[in-house]
Image (tube, rainbow, N blue to C red; front, side, top):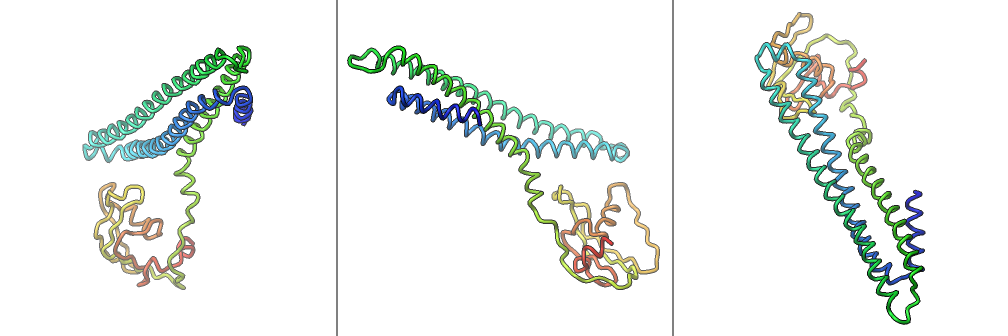
Amino acid sequence: LKSGVIAIFGVVALLRISTRITLCVGMVLVALLFCTERFGQINRIAARRTQDAVSELSSIASEGLCLLRTLRGLNAEHVHARMFSDQNKKVFELQRQRGKALALFGMANSGLTNLSRAVALVVGGLAALSPGTTLTGEALASYLLYLDMVVDSSLDVGDEWACTMEAIGSGERVLSLIANPPAKPTGDEHLDAVQGDICFTGVTFSYPGRPSRTVLKDVSFHCKAGQTTALVGVSGSGKSSIFNLIQRMYDINSGSITIDGIELRSLNGAWISE
C-alpha cells in the first residue's frame, strides 16, 4: 500500500514537472507493467501445477513406505522407484520452467527500468537545451529523482503482485475444496432392523485421487445374513476397499451394492454412519 501511494504521488509530481517527458517514460512503464502482470499469471499457474505435482510425489512416496513389505514381496521396488523418479522429474521440470520465467522477467525488469531513465534523460536533456524552454537543469534533476522513486515503488508493487499470484495459485486447490459443498446422501431410506445380507453385483471402483487405477473390477459376491464370510487375497487386492464401500466411504463407479435388498445409495448417509 505504501509503495502504491508513493508511486501515484510520484507520477503526479512527474506530470507537474514535464508532461512530455512523462508521456514518453509512461510508454516504457506500461511495458514494465505488462511484464509484471504476465509474470504474475505465469507464477500463479506454475505454483498450482507445482503443488499438484508435489502432492502426487508425496503420495507415491507415502504409498511406497506404507506398502514396503508388499513391494519387496512382489519384487516391485524398481517399478515404484521408477514412478517416484518420473514424478520427481516432473517437479524439477516445473521448477526449471518457473526459473526461466523468473530470469526473463528479471532481464526485462532491469532493462525497462534503465530504459525509462535513459528516455527521461535524453528527452529531458533535449528539452532543456532547446531555446525558449521552461525546463531547467534543476527541474530535470528533480524529475530524475522522482522517476527513481516511482520506478522503485512500482517494482515493489510488482514483487508483491507476483507473490500474491503465487499464493493464490498455491491456495486455489484448497479453496476449491472448501468451496465445494459436502456430498449429500442420495436417498432417505433406512432400515428398522439390519439383517446383514450384503450383495455386490458387478462392482467396479477406483479411488477419486487415482481414477486411472482400477481397484475393483466387475466384482460380484453374496454374503448371506447369519453366515461368516472371509475375504482372502494378497495385500492391495481390494479387501479394505470393499469394507470402505460397504460403509459408503466412497461411491462405486458402476454396479450395485445392496444391504438386505436395499440399494446402498438409496440409504440415508447419516444413518449409515451411525
